[in-house]
Image 1 (spheres, rainbow, N blue to C red):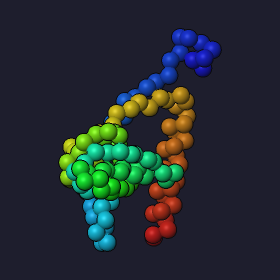
Image 2: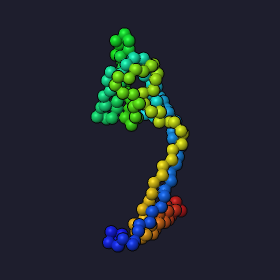
Image 3: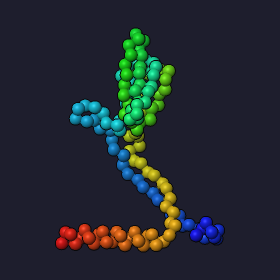
Image 4: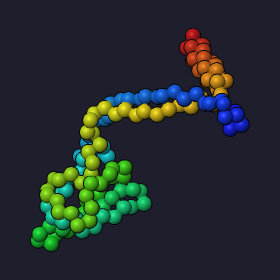
Length: 136
């Protein structure tokens, strides 16, 4: 146990995971999914940004004639605008989640007990064997 003996160290292994990010889609009703960039519906100044309990952001834009429009940006998207900003029609309100097309994450796995790996491999083998025997 490294907590009791400082000469013993946990083994750490780097872990890399990567995959393609989905491209922006449109639902059959014509609404955008939450993996799209949402643009301003009209040019003007942003007067209010509120967030609902579900995490959706409502952006209120007032144009030069004083006409207010509100636009809902789904939960999970990061806004790049703030109250007081001047926006043009169709200017992006959120960070485009599809930029790049490929995502990669790097992390570490800490091996605290080698018997856990043996147990995991035994479990995987048993699950594989069970699935094979169910097919036969």
